[in-house]
Length: 446
Image: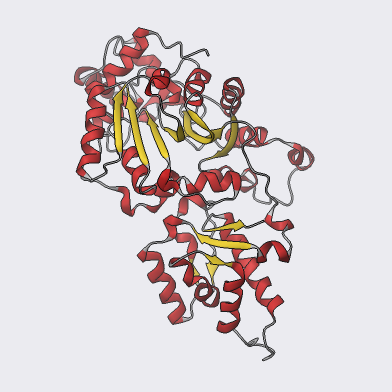
């Protein structure tokens, strides 16, 4: 197997940068335990359900954080998947020590850490259910090499989450890096002097000069050094497009599963009138592949700094019928689960308040990372009351139908008894929308 061709000089530059400034500079006492959006992304239930429409038990998983830095993502992975074994690796010994201390501080015991390169992963002798490689892959001269290294230690049904810097969204930073490289600020390991010179240079520009736009208003804050090193003076930083991403996956022998923030890559959401597109687009878009649609999105609207994606071994996705094509028998054979990150006291209290006040609940205020921008979805109080048992345990769909009929035995307009078919229709409509945001997870027994 061909491994990474990262030169010793390149590795040294990257290692030195993170020895000087481990990333991210998150206080050791900070915990994402109340950040449902962060845990939603790191919970293995999310990508496995997207691929297979099955709800896995992540407590027995072995998870790798490849390029763990100071350990903030290790902590998020552990909190999102209680009981899972977390293994962290990083080039920087100082970063690895920070990560180890962070996990000890928060009482996370089932962990191990190693100072090593990603291409040396087979030396661990472990196979992983999930690999998180966040803000690392773009540092490889060839992303396929990094992906191959991770694939070599990935279980057959396992998944990789990784990301690349967007060439289109981040172009000003790449220009800044070229400028500061010409100025000699990136010849060695940039430290305080180089950071000061880079920021001083940008501040000297007129406001209308493009590179001045890279400066943040809080550039002189406590995280100034971290921001400058990870943007203006980032060693080996590179940008990519969607075609680059898919090319790397193909050459590594991996299969694309989904963008991590998939709801924010909906091409149709960019148009004022999605049902009345210009003729060329109306004719051509229906035949576009997922890769082509994602590339069109970034060309129209390069808003995402990261091309953040899930991938895995080819042919592992379980065939699944679209909910639009489900028959009544499919629904009756279904177990309904609440996404673990929606099962919080805050959401439950809001649900109970909605029920008591007989008022609709704006459910899309929670787990906003899974909802398209600008989308508001309300759950009426009867549906809310029907779904309440899910905050205690998963429920057969048929049990929820029975509960709905007890809550609403009579039609408010006709005063006739509500039929089973009517109850099923109302529940399936609500669940269809909630499942599209992964608030509800529908697992068929067939």
